[in-house]
Image (tube, rainbow, N blue to C red; front, side, top):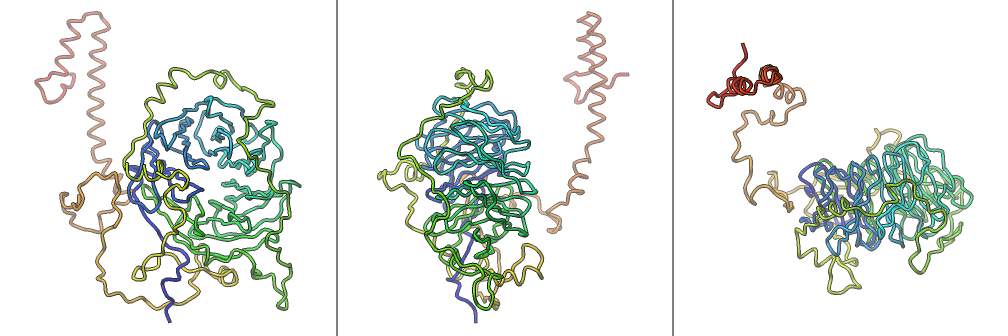
Length: 545
């Protein structure tokens, strides 16, 4: 008997063409779960509303591809770091550039906003971490210690610490006020991709390319537990808002973990590829991924995901749990003390590291900021989201979850696989493959098998609606040859290579002849020689004899 399609756990929400070139980075707004920012090789930052097809705003000014993005807690500011090491901060509500921050010497790999003050932390391929004061447009402090690229930065919920993850396989914890390292966590055997603070307790989670998730105690500075032997590298992690579990994004799957003891509560197979970011809103988890210029968004219904309370496979003996479950609501560690007002910038040990960081804003910076623009491409959505009439309840609406797809659409993500079933089949299946626990017969459809047109049309399109560019191109004799392999493409590129080399060699000889005559000081003879070799009356250059 087929399972009703209305009981989907995960589904594909949307697919958009986000940029005219490849997408290089993206980030979700964590407050609403509805704001999406994408950065591309076209040096633009595009702002989207999740599940809407049109770009709201396009931010320009960078001259190299966007490598990292971050949105602040209120979803009013966005910071973007580029391949050249420059950082720009935009005000989304005012639709203008706020600051340009210069100082890094290589790619910006990670960014994060301070939860209370107007500060931004940046990590770079140059191994340095910088703390910026957005108001005074200057670097407050530089943290040195990593030996390779800094891939992720996170401020603690109370705003006193900064955690950094890097390709040198370490996680470091920095004291912002003291301006020094507190502790270095070692144990990962591969580059550490992500770190995340527990929302309440002194606990830190880190995910690595070594396919492990580690939990660190921030009071005792020791490892709490480690979840090992996953199929693929950990790409992103996110604690549930209540702090009872951790969601980890892997290649085509979402896993739900507990840490005392370490266990996997649930596994959800989602066909999202290499997921890049996660956000939670309305008891739904939103995941986004990108491939070339396409950005895809997915939804996981958390009401159908096991988050706690169950005894995982392997921890039962004689129908009794080996480890008693931790009571809900109990805290094993110290809880963060959040300030009631905005924190002031660190006063003690504030240090300027170089003359370039100590200097005041120059005219070059002002000119650079004038060249940065915020192009509003969808005024209606812009006013609805960033300038709502009711300032208390921001839109897009935060109280309406995304509905599952209609029953007549095929399931794009498999149903939940329980830990007991996943553990039994993982040993016998190739990595990244989990079967559907319920065998479903093929779904009969009365619709024709012809390919349907995409329902989403990108805002930045280069052709009229309803027309196909292929209708105006030469017909291809063999349809199977439309996609060329690398060898065929290279052979076509090389076809004119020999001819071009001959032409360039001839031009070089002609220029050498003109240069030799010119060096004698006889301008008249030089012009005559140049006229002979490059006569406008001839269709090609004259080869010297």
